[in-house]
Structure formats: structure tokens, C-alpha cells
Length: 120
Image (cartoon, rainbow, N blue to C red; front, side):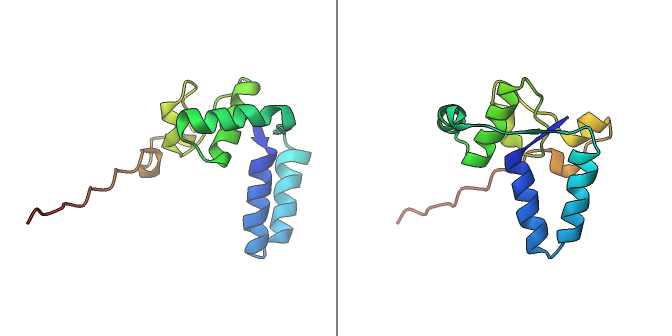
């Protein structure tokens, strides 16, 4: 298992914003220091691949970063984000990895209805 440095920073930002600094340190110790989860980092040479993935799949920087990290290290993406379904790599949901029944959030959200325009 692996987590990107980008994801670690995002978790840290959210936990510290919620005043959970001690819990963040516990998380890092449990998952990365004592756990068997690798920390992945993309470097400057990978930025072109991130930009290309963003263009190719219509991703924002965050999803493109995760996609390129998975591609570079030949990993399976595990995510609730159905945007990865339209890529070559696809994704697995957490429920699939844990071999649990799927939950509603494992499915892509429905597309919003288009507003109807009335002709005069």
C-alpha cells in the first residue's frame, strides 16, 4: 500500500484546520512510521505527465497527481472518485478492496439535470 505526499499534506491540512494536530501525528506514526504504507512523491520531471493527465482526462491537479503516481509506480487507484473510471487504469472502490458490499458513495453521483429553456 502507498499514499502520495500530496494526500498526506491534504490530510494534514484538514486535520490541523479541525484542531486535530495530535491525531494527525498519531496518524503519521501509525500509518507511515510504524505501518507498512509507503510514502510516494512525484518530482519535477513528473510535472509534464501531471499536466498531460489533467488535459487528457479533464482532471484537476489533485486527481492528475494521484493518477500519475499510480501509473509511475504501477499501483491500483483506490478511491471513491468515479472520475478515475474513465482512465486506462480505472479504480477500485474501498469496498472492493476490503471485499465489502458497496455503499452508495462508491457509485458515481448522478449527473445534474439540464435546465430547460422555454422558447417564446
